[in-house]
View 1 (tube, rainbow, N blue to C red):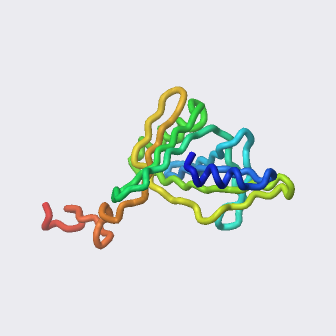
View 2 (cartoon, helix red, strand yellow; view 1 turned 180 degrees about the vertical axis):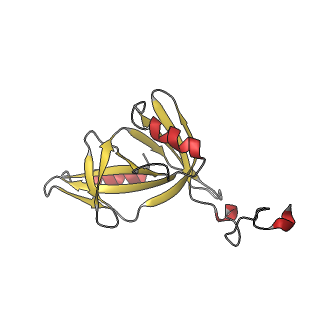
Length: 164
């Protein structure tokens, strides 16, 4: 925990709980995989105003160090995944398409029984994912503009026969 997080937790009100959620999206998923770092499931509002169910699951997020590195990434380890998360990752691995990860922080106010989204969600691309029987480990980062096609076109021999 960073010193700023320690200070924020020490100064927050006793009736407020900070909850962190993860959402994995992939074209092969019938619905996004949503989890919350808590002991109970959470129904919380998304950016568009709709409510979504986040399944309670333990995970650990390691933020990138503050540095001059051009492409920082975060590492997330999700525990107890054998029956829940693994099928999603296996399905995504078969397609070869990119998985997107959305991190959202919420505040749960126990006095008012309300859940409020804090700020804007963090949208990342999953670069690497590994699983075993106990946990899954994901590495995600912002999409590096240097890796995007310019001008957003893929130059293939099918589209441009002169390349063959």
